[in-house]
Image (cartoon, rainbow, N blue to C red):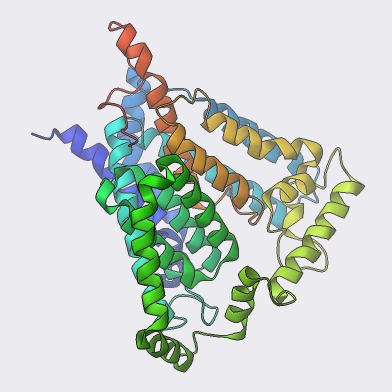
Length: 410
């Protein structure tokens, strides 16, 4: 029989994944409910768990807590090096809220049974996002503001693709073996309608890692079946009907074709890629002008002559904080994976690969809630499995993670 305390903790996990990983928190802006309201509600409903953890010393002090303090400290210090205008102040507020949210998620995901529950609900979020993206492919601009590209509840096509890839990484090991190939294919069907090149590259890197680790011989039959199905669809009248339907509905736009050409090696680049190159070049120049001190917190958000940010978290931190900014993301990744062992390597490796790569395409890595949830869940699982040998060898020791067994990774 499930105890009241266990049911409450499961509710917190479901609330976190259901509201923030699906991006309902941001999507609800359209209905006048800002994300800060959801975060505040999350903090309120988590308060009993926080108080109980503090009074019973059940909340582990993980390295990521030290990183959080470091990040907040340099954000505040470099605010005084900025113009101290409303943009800089807003950036500091955003970072502090992100850190608070990260810590709340760490507390909620404390316990291997809670982590496994989170993985299962993330799998559900992946299926939901895929269904919405496919629906929007045939009904352009249902959610997205860009014709021909799906975003679902994420409002942003790149974020939609990234969430699907992160969801695949985090939930892959709770999917039964006989359904794993189908699940991988389903995530592809969700990522493709976004036509996000960075998300597609990330998906291929992650799936490539899964196949290498599983062994090509073990996957060859499934790959052959998948290839036959894909070829069969492309050469059948069904594909012609699909293509005609997409053209009639305005889903196949010039922007979409330009993005497809990116993978075939054709084309001269679209406006988006050209703009990204230009802003990245200017950001690097700004770093060169002030390599030690940087330009202050939030400076990378308002580069003169551009209406967009750097699309690169590494460049953004260099512009804001100078050379010390380079270490912010590496220190974060190191703090998450501190104490990594063989039990979590197959989960952590594709996550690390994707996070390093995604930072090169996004400057919002440290504020998007689905990414922060993924960071908190990964840190919690690494810490839980790290403590396992100690529990086995020292039966009298107080467990750091008190709930459940180890997270199975195969």
